[in-house]
Image (cartoon, rainbow, N blue to C red):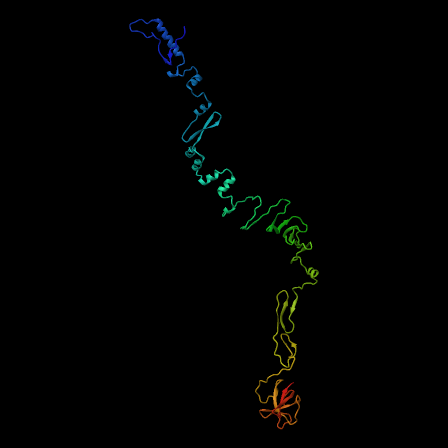
Amino acid sequence: MEAILPRAGGVYSPPAGTKGVPNTTIQSVPYNALIDDLTADANAARPITAGGTGATSASAARAALGAQAASAALASIAGLVTGADKMIYTTAAEAYATTALTPFARTLLDDATAGAALTTLGVSAFAQTVLDDADAAAARATLGANNASNLTAGTVPSARLDGAYVDFIQIAVTTDGEAVKLVGSATGDPYVGFWKATARQGYIQHRDGTANGDGLRVANDVTGDYLYLSNVNSTDALKFYDSSVAAHNTVWHSGNLAAGDVNALYGYTPASNAVQLIAGNGLTGGGAISANRTLTLGAPSDITNSTTNSVSGTSHTHALGFVAAEVYTGSSSTNTSFPIGTVLTMAQNGSNPARQASVIPCLYSTNAYVQSGYSGAGAALSGTWRVRGIVATADWLVVQRTA
């Protein structure tokens, strides 16, 4: 006999004719059918509508209920101890643990966009524009670092500027140490060039080696000449190359110049600074030529008709070279010595001497002079006197002392 299905649509209903009637005999067939039906229902899977799972196994029950299948991950999560400000994260496949999740971190997690997250992090709008740039060039443009004119203050850290840079107006370096360093290769000789438009005018360079021209060089491209400090250490290390004769010349200085060198070059020997400059007669001063010396000419005495050409230790005199007229400045009426050139008038003694004749004037009374031999003539005047002419009449002569 087939089992009676006790449920319809998942709802149990007892078979028809199984309910008892009061004061009547229970019939075995309907009663047994009810018992069989209850047994079958108890052993069958209880449907979901009746609070069951509709299945006789755990996997079938989960499938019937649409529940999650058995999972090690869920088992791992179930074993966690959670708390405030915690979050779950994986540590391996199907394995979980908890970590701190601060309130601040949660303010980032609820941001809908990267910009909102940056704002939460305190990143300024300007900095966000830099972070939004696609590449370094765009970032430099945003920062204003793509134009040297924007670098108006501050310092540039140590860096390497590759390539050639032109049109600098001025470079001002403030330092007490090495300001500019040119670094060449192991075999290179870098240099600093000086240009006018497209033509190099000169350069400064250090060249390796010990040959002529090697060392620290200051060169003039216009002439082809250069001055260099040789790499060979000696007193003759400073040299000058003259391109006009293709010669390397030693530069003379106090360390390598001797008297013999000057004699060989110029034909004379320089004087020793111990040599004395002697002041001769009539001069003062002088001394060793190691210092500036002044020779002073002694003050001469007055030149007269009697002075001669002569010198003394500190002075000198000159001869006049001609007979000069002098003036008697005295007041004595008995004076008989008059300067050469003195002119007098005197009365003649009747001898009528000719012009330029030598005569002897004499004192007469208190206000006149007469010729020697004149009656009453007094003391004769000293020196030589000559007749120069007459005064009014032939009795009076003009005479002059000539010697």
